Image (cartoon, rainbow, N blue to C red; front, top):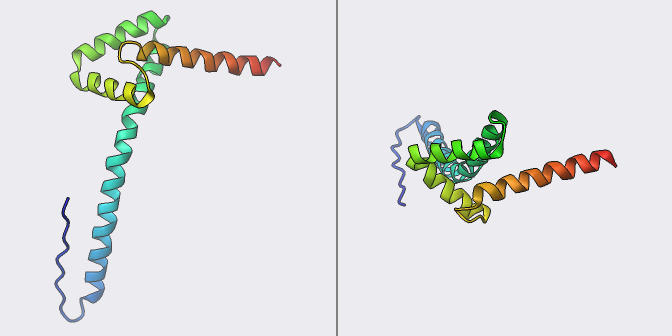
Length: 116
């Protein structure tokens, strides 16, 4: 990736040139942050989609069927799911169920700690 900054200075415009350089650097850093941040957001999006489906449907199997249907209709979602599985350490075939199992275990542990 190659970046260059062209600077034109005329008398009385030094402040403007310094502002332009500062703004360019901040814009570049902002874009780089968004690039890396958006990679993480993909994981969170899949997690949130699964959570929303669990809230919407009465059983995990219904939610899973809906999620599979969504992935069949949207190739980008399917790719995001594969990336999410890789990032989370899940197998593609079992990632959904592994995530559900972790969620249920976390909820059980929470309720157990509340009853003590």
